[in-house]
Length: 272
Image (cartoon, rainbow, N blue to C red):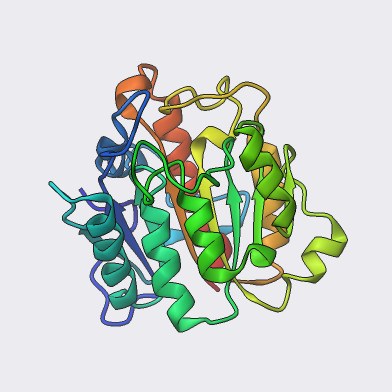
């Protein structure tokens, strides 16, 4: 089932890709089922967004299906996602999967946009040098992203979990906060750059999005993330992802529905 409103287009303005991968998950696996579940849930919402006053039917949106990540090592999964994003026309929206796949998307877009900056919504800092013996992991993703684009071009919002060493390393970031707000002086350093937005669903409070592998209390509200998107719309977002939805741990379906709704909003917000 393709994502809501997606059709075949010779020159799509936006492309949805799935990255069904959760091989490095350490608490509760299940994120590999998310791309299919989010597409399924999208069929239950409307193509029209009253928040945006726009309709997916008016957007040249394609769904390129899933990247084949079966049996991949983390390094191989990152490389395959990189290649898929590099080949995708228009604005890519990557549906994870665990957060590891973000590194592949950022690698592809940083090659196209050398001055790329990254804004991540995440409960966890993900700044470990390695985790469980791997340099490429859901817990090391933002460390790898920072090494690629420069830590001074990396913002982490909604952060409320990490080791002592990770919190010390966070001082090198452009900004790191438990809230979802971008202070004016931080935005001033980002506004003229191409931007990549990564939304780890555990950045939301678990009362809003319980269906994730590593839920953390004191998270963001939907309104917090909507406000962030409104700020980013004033800049130039060249790619985004939505990761760490875990359908097996979402018995009510509310997290999957939120993800489908948010995917629609991101597409309509960032595709002119």
